[in-house]
Length: 125
Image (cartoon, rainbow, N blue to C red; front, side, top):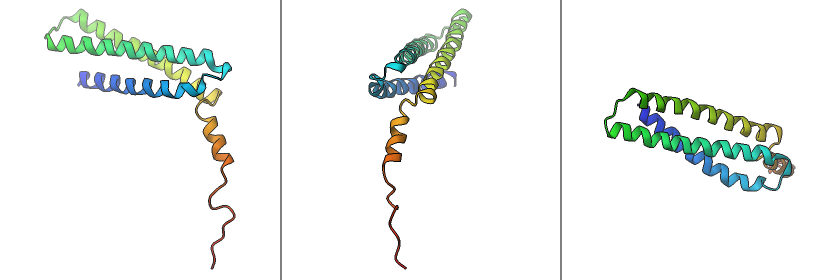
């Protein structure tokens, strides 16, 4: 069960990093958020690489049937560290969205600029 959760989380992290890199291209020209954006990206990549290494290590330990306690402690400690990195990544991501409106403000502005489809139309009785 632990391996399944680790692999599912790592796969989710891969997808999150890929979509984040795709969305970050639109934010490259906003000078005010560059430092936060770079920290967010750095934390995300550290989390990704760390969890990939942990996943490979965990699979190797299971495949080789190694039940040596220091290895298990190492994997557990790595997961705790990875959880902290994900927390920091989310913190910087929250700053980007809630303080700067990154990825949200353009959508909200386009919604406000688009007239409602039902505005001005009346239904005949």
